[in-house]
Length: 305
Image 1 (cartoon, one colour):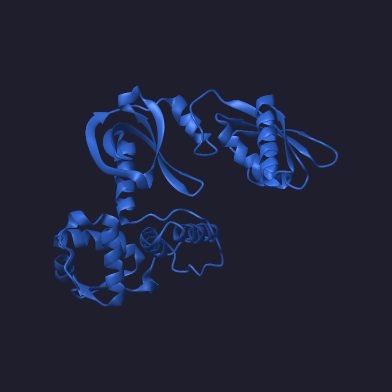
Image 2 (spheres, rainbow, N blue to C red):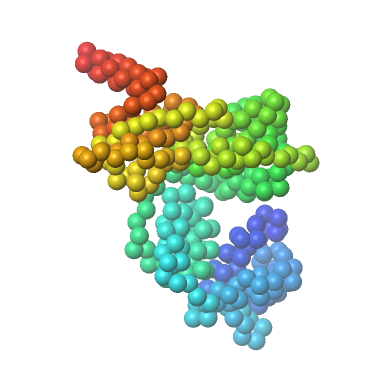
């Protein structure tokens, strides 16, 4: 096995994953493991005793191996279902992400027999994307500003959240050089991330607005309210999976339902309306209803020619 150059090239999780897979193949001594991983014997001992001992790592003399019968498995059925779902979701995040996630999840539950099918069309994250993801996650947790390159330009920003919208990952941020203008950067397009020393605080109002976002089109403007009439054929979908800031305001005898949804940008609400046409109607505001009507009229006028 090729010797891994140094510990800095591998996160703790990657090192533990590698240890786990090595010990599943055959038994190793601590000194041999330390040489392969280029870490100290104390680091290997800590990984074995504090982490992998819970997932089947056992010692026989000076040698360690994985005995799957010794795994501490105290998951109940509900927890096992959650693990199955997470493992399936991770398949849609790309090979690099799934390779790491699957090993970790398998350690938690050795019975991932996948009776669950989840097909989410997410963009795939490569090894470099995952490294950037970790750097950004740490900066967000510590509330530390960063410098980065985005679409060929240099930025100094305050990272707020990593968000997944419609299958794409974004960094939500405040542009420090533009009076803290709120922006969204596509994660895979961010390059050359540098952690700075400057700390910052996140306004509570910003956190609240982000939690209520329905799509990447949202902004920090004062929300408007769309009042929509749903035909009986689609009401169940809005009851099963309510949108952020959605409320049911009325039900008719024929099974149709009136709902209200907050939005800050027409593009935050328009794709939802177009998806359910002809089973959805805009009641208010008039500006939104007129826009939908005009765009549909223009579309059919073009394809009718």
